[in-house]
Image (cartoon, rainbow, N blue to C red; front, side, top):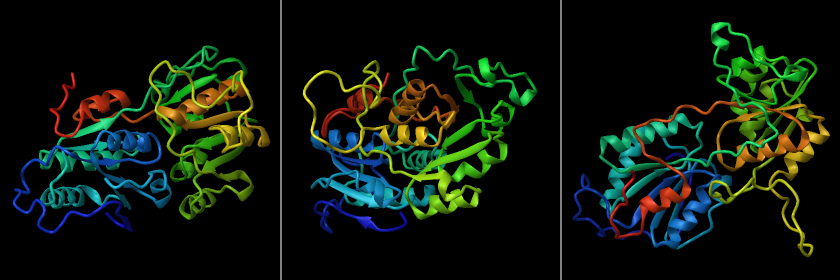
Length: 343
C-alpha cells in the first residue's frame, strides 16, 4: 500500500498468531475487501454485522469516508502497489492470523487492480471472490442495445431516427467517430483519465464532463481541453444500496404518496439531472459498469429523452468466481462456518 493508513479497532498483539505458518491458510473470521464507494460500504456493513473482522482497502480518502468506524474494521487508504506488494501483505497478514477470503469489489473497469489481486492470490493459494454488480434494467421505451460489432471491420452502423440510436453499446471510444453527433452536446461521465481519448474521437459539437472533485481529475480534464465552464466536480452519493434484481431503478422518479419528508441530501441523480438541463445535453456517454451508477444514467436518459452511449465493460477473468451481492454474502457465510458451494 502507498499513502496513509487508517486503522480502526484494536491491533493484534505482537505474539498473536506468532506460531502460525505464514504459508498456511488464514483463520475463519477475517476478510480483506478491496473496494470503493459503489457497493463496498453496504457489503462491509453486512459482513461486520455477521461477525467478520474486516480490512477494507480503498484508493482515496474520500472513498474511505464512506465506511463508518467499527471496532472490527481496519481501513487502509492508498493504491495497491502491484501483485508483489499484495502478496507480501497477504503473507504478513497470515503472521497475524490471515484472511479467510479476499474479495475483489473494485470497479469493473479497474482491470489492473483485479489482475494484480488474481496474480497474488493464485501465487499464495488464497481464496478470492469477485463482486459482480447487478445488471441494469433497460427501460422499455429504449428500442436498442445492439453493440457496434462491425465498426473495426468497416461495417455500417444501424442508426436510429435523427442519426443516433437511443441506446448504444460501444466496443471502444473509437466507435464515437462513427456516430452522427454533429450539433449534439455530449456529457462525458467516463472518468477523467480517458477524457482526452474520448475528445479525440468524438464529433460532437460541444463537450461537458462530470468528474470527481480532486486535483488530479481537474488537471486531467483541463489538459484534455475542457474549460472550467464545461466541468462539474461532483462526488457520487456514497454507500448506495445494492438492490436485488427486479427491485426497480435507483433514485429516479416520483416519491410516491404520503406525507412530505424532511429535507435531506439530494436524491441520487438530482445533480446529474440539473447538469443535463443547465448544459442542454443531448447525449450521455458513460461506462457499462452495472450497478447503481449505470442504472442512474439509464433512468435519467430515459426520463429526459437523451441518447445513452455505453462504453462496453471489459471481459472479466473466468478464473475468479463472480457473484452478485446476495450470492456473495451467501458464499462468504459466517465466521467459523464452512464455505458455501459456488455452483
